[in-house]
Image (cartoon, rainbow, N blue to C red):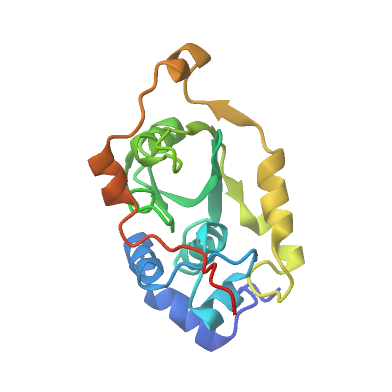
Length: 208
């Protein structure tokens, strides 16, 4: 891999660098449509298609962070009776923040104000719920530096990046709280539920 260009074309690299910082990367993701296909595109493919889902967006954000001088870090949030959520994470003055894309409005950007990864993960708890309105977030992983996959050309390959997803599955995850607390949790209030799913993308089930 060309270390100056990170395997990207000059045009692709200029685009990533034009996002400038984590907030700029988040704005780019927010403007990008959310898709529901079972894919695992590289950042190059996301740039070309201008659409992504949670995993692809986190990997894309890690690549954009790298192009702007940050380590390409992602972490996994693990849920019960729900899907996981993947974040690109970064640090400023020792505090953690995150860039993310979600079908739920409150599971996206975090300013770098969290003193630990646990604090950062907990900031997603209240908005992390399933369609039964159960609060489902339970565990978090340590960050993964995606440079470990440079030999697989994760930023530019046309092959699916399922190897990154499998690596996240295999990581140790740390509980946010115990089972006794989990049993006492209440369902999400209707007004919060409605606000969080505003603009949610759904699969098209219409038949041809």
